[in-house]
Every structure is written in C-alpha cells, then in structure tokens.
Amino acid sequence: MAKEGIYVKGVSEELYREVKAQSAKLGKTISEVVTFALQDWLRRKAPEEDKEFLQNNLAYEATEDEVATEYSGKYIAIERGKIVGAADTLEGLRAFMSDVDHRIILRVAGAPPRMKYLGGSSLRRTKS
Amino acid sequence: MDDEFEYKAPVIRVRVSNPITKSQTTYEALFDTGYDGVILLAWSTYLELGLRKCELPRKLWSTGVSVTGEEFPLRAAHAQVELGERRMLVVAETYRDNSRRLIGRGFTEDYVATLDGPRKELRIVAPACRVL
Image (tube, rainbow over all chains, first blue to last red; front, side, top):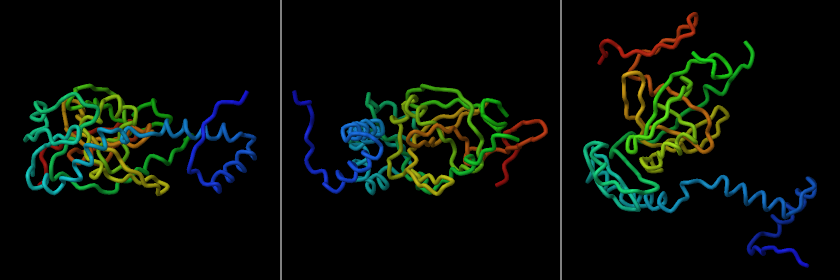
C-alpha cells in the first residue's frame, strides 16, 4: 500500500538535489527534513503575520502623511485597518477601543526610529 | 544586586503593565548600560501582557544591533513601568524569542544611578533639582 503523501509544485530541482545530498550525509530522509522545516516555520511564524497586524500597519503606512498633519501631538488608535479614535492622552483613547487581537497606538510626532545597541550584557564571566 | 542571575549583577525590580488592559507582571531586569533603549522585555512577557494591543507601527520600530553586529527589528509598544512610587509610560521593546530582560540607559535619563560596588547596591534616585 502506497504511503500517503503530498506533492509540492514549484520547488527548484537544484534546491531539491542539495537538500537530498545534505540530508543523506546526515542519515535523514527528505520526508524528515521537510517535516522539520515545516514545523520550524510554523514555530517561527510571527504574530506580525496575522491579518490584523498587517491591516493596521498597511493602514498606517497608507495614511502616514495625513496622520502627521491631522493628528499632530495626539494619540491615535488603529484597529482592523482603520483609525478609530484620537485623544490627547492614552487614557482618553479607551472610549474608542474594541476587542481586537492587534491594535496600533501612536503618539503622532513621537521619536523617530533609530539603531539601538544591545551588546553590553553579552560579555559574561562565569567565574570571578 | 541579586543572585537570580548567574553572576552578581545590578538588577532593578520593576512592575510592567499594559496601559490599556492593566494586566501586569513584576520581575527583576538587568540594568545594562550597553542598551540605549528604555526597557527590553522578554518575548514571552510581551505576548503575555498583550502588548500587541498597544503596539507602535512597524515603521517606527527601532533596529537592534547585537554585540556581533546582527541587526533585527525591535518590536515596540506602550507600557507602564512602576519603579518604587513612580509610574512612567514608556516604549517597551522586544524581539522574537528574546529571553533577556534589560533596563537600559534610556530609563535612567531622569535619574541619578549609582553603582556601589562594596555594598553590592544599585541606587536609583530622582535628582533633588533638575539642571536645565
């Protein structure tokens, strides 16, 4: 009886050959390698790939200039791809909020993004 | 300074909360002057506090640079931090699968931080008067 399986279109033969060669060296089957890769992808899949995250960020990016002029100095909330409210304080935004999985809250004209260094604590001594 | 870390290190006990839902957690974070942000949360804490519900747009996230030069986006969200009697609304950051909990230089911009080696103490106090 044939084993159940799946057929995936569009995988390059060169990639397949390389995976086959590398997996053989490790004593793994292609099936094991592909299963591992798919499980790993699921594990790593970011919440940011969620629909609401994308909706909200795309909405902000599409209206960034308008937001900067219209809501300067205010807090705004973006839910399900729409600006749902603006207020002078974060607390004041509460009235506009609904039950969502993702929401953007922004104080318009806040500090721009920059590089931040995280290096200091990586050098550790285990003995004094 | 605390023994929770594998070595004697200056740590700060803070309460971090979601300013919208008020869910909160208290923990000790390493005071790391090599980090120039305000507070770096563990990825699990970021998710547990529901900070995805008060997140900054991805376009405004900063880029983290590790000691090896690796660059990665730092997710950012509004969070409330309580230190002693003080409450501050700050931008908390994290990155995927991060387990480090750091308090950075940004946190102490309004304070005087003193490392007292002989006493194994980190003191953080508000200045009596601010120099403008």
